[in-house]
Image (cartoon, rainbow, N blue to C red):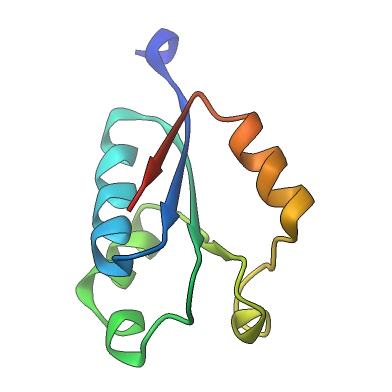
Length: 94
């Protein structure tokens, strides 16, 4: 299975919940995942959902490009976002 291990970036732009679900699900296949919240801060409801718990269980530490979230998550500037996308085998945009 290690031959099929991919580096995947999930960009959470329009649907944070779906992006969290997809990211957690892809870890089942042994892929290296990065989940990056974009567009707007994550709502309190989303942050307290069962999908947030799945991220924790899957050992996924989300990142963000949203400055308002920098106190809670690692903040990526444009250069770091470009680097994450460029180094990925696949990008999922949700």
